[in-house]
Image (cartoon, rainbow, N blue to C red; front, top):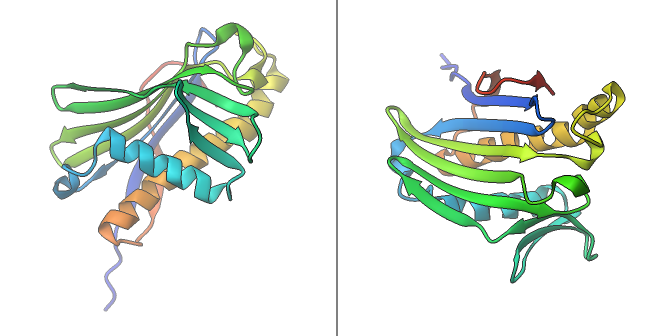
Length: 197
């Protein structure tokens, strides 16, 4: 008799906050035995490798003296430009944060505000791995008070791509470390107030 494995959960929330910025959070829990490996540096490098591979090098992460850029193909067009990653540890949480400086995907008036963070936290049932985007002002939204059309366009394009990328990255990471292909389900969570996107 086949044993049906329970699907693993990946938690997710994506909202447009009151100040017009985007907050997006995805997380899952991996077994404690992987704790030593799951550093923010490891997660960041794995994510960059994954991004390049699944976009077929359409998006190319490039390290520079100033930090990091997500470039379009082999052009100098930077979709997003980040400062040098900042790593920190506080109690049981280890984090790596990329401050979003500028790029074609950022509102010009809101540069140097957003953050993309990779976190590993020891919890009772393992290691909680989180990817969090905060204080991000996408150019597609146009302003801090975007129209219905702009919100709709952002939701169906950039927001959808980001959610799919982060969820699949977490699933891929779990499968790579555990060799478990039993599948995943995305569950909505409430962390921050805002309009769901």
